Image (cartoon, rainbow, N blue to C red; front, side):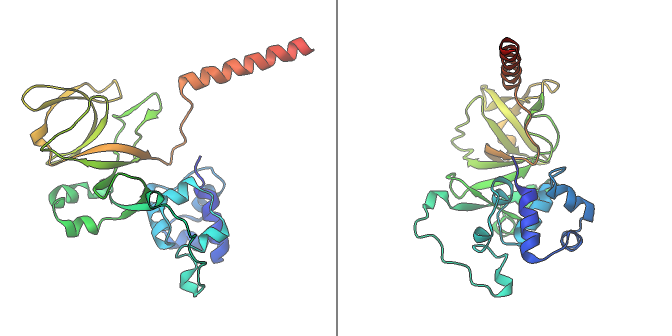
Length: 260
């Protein structure tokens, strides 16, 4: 469950911003802010990034944790007003610290393809902050299309995938896992079905409407393994969960009849 609406309302209250003033900061319509706060809709990923960067927060915190006023003192939200934040907690495990990951939005993909080898360009990409243990070589890509979505499960359009680099020289690719292949003209996100001779890979989409395809590994400029997905969509229950829920309801109804 996303906590972004409650966090936006809390930030507005602390900063003494009206919904209209908050909307103006990020180029939004005032009713959109109200819809976010009431849980009727959620901001797009680019809006979440703008909010997080403006207030010195991380996208992960905005989405996954209902922040308290005391916690907000640890971030930049108060620093512009000269209020000194409390000292950090004495014990903070290094493996729980957020790591900065360059984010490649869909509208900058072609730029990234051309300049992916330029460290200056990569460092200037929008940063996302995620807690993980994947090491420094990570990327976040925005998903375009529904090829990896099936029965409302999987990767949705505009989801963001967190990836770690795969060395093309060793190519330790494992069947069943999802990989993001940066090619000369696109980002190909697919599940590896099997490895074929002569450096070929058989890739498939989770959506059965899209057929399997063969892909030559040497066509990839970069290879990234998808490790996590961040979405603003609420996940529907799986078919098994839905059946369990219906069964529990039927048992409750049967017990109520017996008691009656």
